[in-house]
Each structure stands twice: as C-alpha cells, then as structure tokens.
Length: 135
Image 1: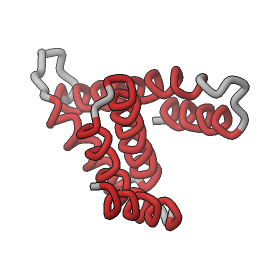
Image 2: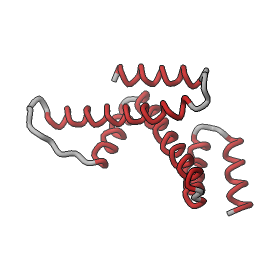
Image 3: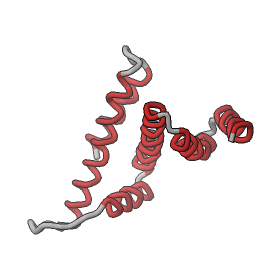
C-alpha cells in the first residue's frame, strides 16, 4: 500500500509540471497497470491466507476487492476514482485514433457524472451542452 501511495505522489508531481505533454499519456498506462497489479497481488495474498496453494481469481473479483478496500480506506477511494478517469481517457484516445463517434459519446457520458462528482461545473455544462446540441 505504501508503494501504491508513493507511485500516486510521483504521478501527481509529474502532472503538475510535465516536461513533455505526451509524458503523462505514456506514464498513465504504467500507473494504471501498477495499481491493478497491486490489487491482484493483494487479493491473491488474502485468498491464500498463509498457505501456498493456487487460487483462482477473475477480473470481477479484483474490481470487487478494490471497491471493498476503497470503502475502508479513503486514500484507496481517491486512487480508484483516478483509475476511472484514466480508463475514460483511454477511451477518448482510442475514439480519436479510430474515428469512432459512438465510443467518444460513451466516454463523454461516463465523464459527465465524474465531472459533477468532482465539482467541475464548467465541464459538466460543456459536456451537457454538447450532448443536447449535437446528439
């Protein structure tokens, strides 16, 4: 958990002063992958319960584990929200590269409540105006 927090702090420091605008895009993938890897290892450790036997886990088990940890630890909740933003950013990048309007609109629909929950009122207005005008 401490390593996860250190990675989070390092990413935040790079975001506030990136030397290269594309640097955050390259590092965001590694950041999200590191968080999922940490969650998988934590879940495996809990399921093993001190034994050395093989355990089977699924993607939904990992997400459920992350949500249960976020309910107990507020810092994990913040990191979980950041992962959701990152996943939507990945959707936007893929929509732009593929020219996929449906994927862009789906990402925008996910972003609007996230903007509202983070009190980004100007972005809420901008995205809802876009959806009302053009979709």
